[in-house]
Image (cartoon, rainbow, N blue to C red; front, side, top):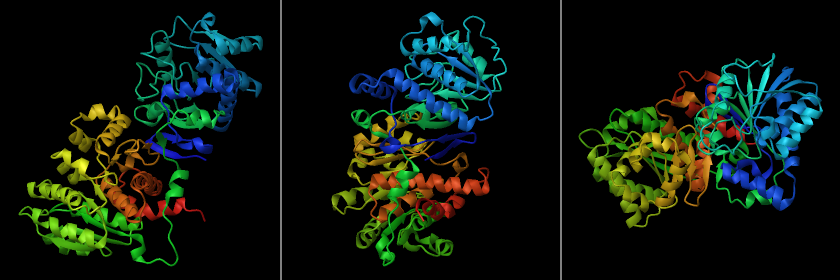
Length: 539
């Protein structure tokens, strides 16, 4: 099975997912431990794993580069280089012309890498050491380059002369396939360790590494394929890996069923608290998205002066006109009416889109959280946009929301919630999300590229859908509506958050395929939500 992920206009991630391992995302240390325990604990020799990896990568080359007759393989002295030597040998066996470039002296090779170097020599393969003049490299007419210089064991910045070699091959107009991860990439953070190979495609071994799924690592990796080389499930399970990559298979099993005997009350209610003068669009998008996702009934709580406008904009959404401030936002005195309505109708409460940051409206948000906790109403709350900005002014209230609450900040809102600079949290999206959920006990959707979802139980999910056309106003409002719509159908919060982000991105991909990424708007994604859901339901 293949999963498409558009991180930008030129980078697609493809995952060949197999078995129960389909979702796990590892750190370099976890991957090394899996490898070690497979070899030492289970007794599968390292050279067998290396041979299997080489075979699978050769199959990938045959699939994706069928016309590349002459192939250059850049080989380091470690296990990644050993994989590269197996690849070179097996490519030669299937009739490709192969040129092996050693970036370390032959006498520095040890273990399985040395064994495979000796085999390559015995077979008479073309081997060249490039250790001195690396400003330009004679690639002997190669049509594809294979990067097998460094794997997950790289520590510290890439040094000369290998940094010069990487720069040289990056400057060639020849496709590059990276083995396991682009050489010079930090497997955990996705940051370049000085110089990094800019791959067109990366074939990663066993399980995806964190650094391949976050920026800028995803851009260095290009298209990503994950291959299974037979690591035993019990060895993987022993690592207690909590980070997952959302796949189509995951999303499909989570779509809530619909019974032929059902009616609108079967699929729950959503109360959207949103909108202010000048920002009716956000309220409309959120409300419609909840309906498009399958919620049975949706009501929009709005300032009363906006009611005529939204009655016209929203044919299928009910409205609850409420007292307003002089600026046209919801007044503090609306608190009791909102809570009473939500309690009476057992509605999911979605708070924030287009709400404004008027002081009275900020107080309204604080009171809704306080009273839900104080009165033990048990309302499930989704907070976005100005709801988050209000929360940032009284961050201690986050602890009152409870484990079923879902917060959906973009990086700027997350920076306000945490007082962490955007650049810092963007450099560690997974860690930032984990820390926040651990502290406050809520489900967090940290929007971005990629969106990361963290749950109080310690699970983290990295989304695998979406595209650059979605970087425009209103997309977050649509996501809030999708989350609330699924929550209304009794989907647990963690699942609702992960599935909603996947569906949101998938709807964006469907819309982009039809319309293109340039000029894509939130309304296009809104209209594509039912198509996204339908595409996951088997005929």
